[in-house]
Length: 498
Image (cartoon, rainbow, N blue to C red):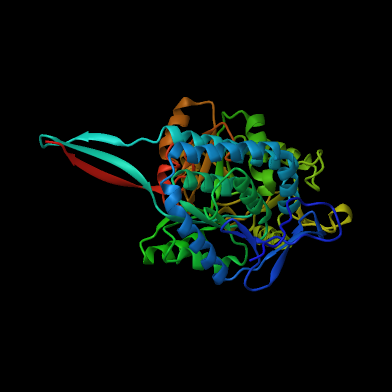
């Protein structure tokens, strides 16, 4: 078939581009013939592009392409696979500013954060590529004479990836690159709010020399395509980053067929501030964790559990920090906080503000949508702080996913830890203290996959495992030293030589 034209840049013009699925190395329209629109959350009148409203038939086509291409890729030596990822890193580096601008226009995060996200994708490509020269197995002696055991790793086959809108390049990268390096083929279903960067990643990998069919991107409705991908008989593994509710459904679908499932889910992340804390550092870290990316990240600071001896001073300082934030279009270099991703998120956050008032918490700052003047065409919301919050309140227990933080006063370290552990989540927790006694107790006592001491809840690094406990995941860890191994299976080989 004739390949449709694919827009490779995003010029500022009146005619918005149409983007296509990437299947088998070709840009293809959906079998439905329908499209959906993506707009700039800072200026909804600006259409970023039209994307394919794909069907299960399109997804089936992508899986077939992946299944056909994967065996030859599995037979490709690991250093050769790594060389393609290295070239992808170089291409991403040359296009860092272009991709950052596109990300800000479609997702809304400020430009410096978007630049940092592209840099993460570059770093992940290089880090994962290093595995091509250090993939290791074991050599194990046998209890029998003249016999030796070996372990080797082999790819799973086809990996289905379902990624969220808040990190539209970094999360696809940190799933795709390890899956490819392990010898798998990939079918990626990106979030419909921000599909552009996933398609850009397809262009980068094609230019880097990745053989056709190994990386496929299908856009469209999450419910339909996500269900079909998670239950597809020719998909060997699903990796999802999303809400706990969606994660439970994906786990159910995968469980029916004993399909491997890696889930990175929600959080209700806490920062504990003890009476001996460095308050300026704690305030700066909470402001960054709560209001960076407009609070739209799974590791965002949502609860601040503060010792009563310092809660008044801490609250005053945090209010000052929130009031100093400059809110607006993330493309402006002087902006500290951009819009939420869509108007639905504005409404959802505001409903929690009204709920917090009804629950009896005290609104200390913010709590309103921004709709006048320069904010009239976007999805803007004030940074919002509630004080005198009780642990049983819904605003202290449910993931809000916006610039919203609850301050919970406590009387002791023991009470602080009990409150921190009191939700269903266990993703990221921080503690601010000068005491080594409390530092090491917190490392032991806090039920969280990530623990930070005197640092924000949002500062993970790619060479360390990332993931949560309880309802924040199913035990899988993204990235870290086992990233590639997690997309493979162990095979035990016995050799009798006498």
